[in-house]
Image (cartoon, rainbow, N blue to C red; front, side, top):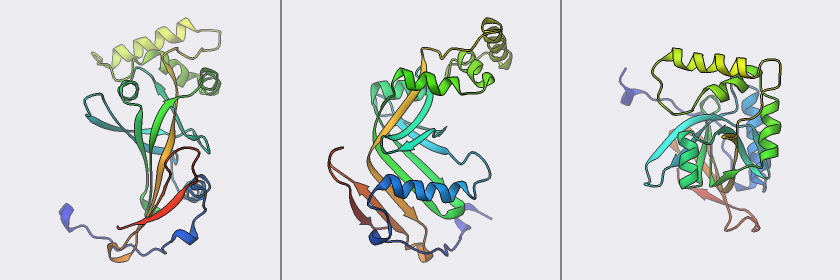
Amino acid sequence: MTLDASRVEYETAGFDVADVDPDPFVQVRRWWDEWVAVAPNEPNAVVLATADAAGNASARTVLLRGLDASGFTFFTSYDSRKGRDLEAHPYGTILASWVPLLRQVNVRGGIGKVGRAESEAYFAGRPRGSQLAAWASHQSSELADRAELESRFAVADQRFAQQDVPCPPYWGGYRLVPESIELWQGRPSRMHDRLRYERDDPDAPWRIVRLSP
């Protein structure tokens, strides 16, 4: 079968402005809970898209660690490619693609670092191996081979033997504060439903608009 011959009819119920919660965080959480109930693994995996100072875009999968009225939170190395992108252009998009439910959530807005205390509190709850990996991996930098990475891990393990592993100064959280949140539901004949929450500033009320599929 060629890619262009692949066809699936979406037999799902639709939704309209009157069917969703006026608060987008409540609505996204509702969909999120439905996704978690059927997701086989890593239900909090989303795609984060950023751009560097020259406008070159990049995307990668990250694990969302916070979803509430303050925004969408994830953690990473500040020295990674996404960290460098966000330093130059603190704006991005998070895409949750839940194909088994024929749904997508697309969130766009400014992205900034969370407070140091929040990053350290989250880091303290990570498995020790993940903590050591944060010290061992200079994320996005080139490696000569796998052995180099494993050697760095061993050095970190020895360095912090018999003590708690501290949060590296170059590692921490980011939070995307939405300017718009779009919900997509697959429908028959490609007549999909798309609703977008949007507002002009963080203090303004959300409005909901319907978009063409």
